[in-house]
Amino acid sequence: MAQAPIQFDRASGVLEGANAWEHLAAVALALGSKVASNFSHRGYNLCANLLRTTLPDRGIQIRLNPDAIFEFPYGDGYWSKLLNRTYSYEDELELLFKDSADVDYTLLDCGANYGYWSVLVSSKPFGLHKAIAIEPSGQNFPKLANNAKINGNRFEAMKCAIGAARGTARLSGTKHEAFSIAGAQSDGEEVPVIALDNLLDDGKVASDGKYLIKLDVEGVEIEAMKGGARLMQIDSVFLCEEHGNDPKHTVSRYILEETPLKLIVYDPRSHRLETVTDLSILDRIKVSTHVGYNVFGTASAFWLARIDALNAKAARPRAMRD
Image 1 (cartoon, rainbow, N blue to C red):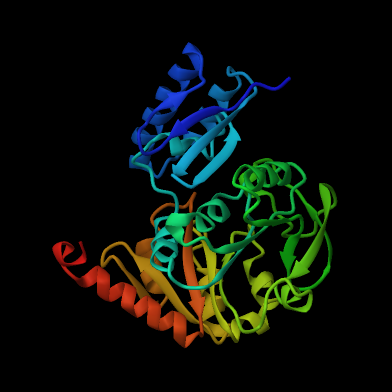
Image 2 (cartoon, rainbow, N blue to C red; image 1 turned 90 degrees about the vertical axis):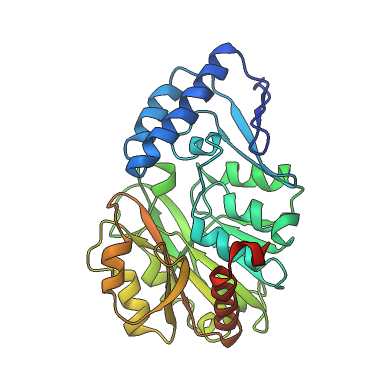
């Protein structure tokens, strides 16, 4: 019988249910993240995954906030950074999600992996939003479904990939966080593919709703946007990964030149979500080739006004914001 998961509370730092070696490993994983953060966590995943081979096969449940629990295999290189309480995952997404807690929107979490953002966005501190977590991998999906279950099945999990149109594709890769249907695959797992607009066709979402659409789809971002032409025309924001190793800024260039969307990026220098007309700003922002950067695209007057208001809050002195 599988061991019960280890428990870790990010707010208090309390680790429960671990033996002495597992406690020591947690210290090493957290300290390793703090050190590696100075180098954009280069090499951290590899070292953590090596450490994982010495650990029992069990899960760890991270309490992200009082109403959000996120479980993954203990020692997982990608997610163990959460044991470092100073680590923030995708700051620019959290900024928008937290500010949108009072908005009646649905999260379309495409390439959901184990469901981190679906867990958070559907929690009370983030506004109890509806979320649809879409993940094609037969390896990842049970972990995604488990995270839905331990959070009261408050978000829906769908096992499929996102593309330009309905069909099937081959999913392959060696890292759970980087499985992809990009390219002509001859091996790997066969998975169903849907277009974003099929969610409208199938009654999963309504044409008069508001949406935040996270596209972490490993090289298929442009195809996914092509399949979401109708969603682009309503109150939606597309949250797309721009790859750090792409000097041509292909995803951002597509948004800027081939869609009706305005391109918005988080500028760490100004601490604002900046509307972009010149892609050269990304040369400065994308400082690490081995990580992804999120860029936003929207044609929605509602969401553009919200982003303007968010920037206005950021511009106020901290004492006034508090």
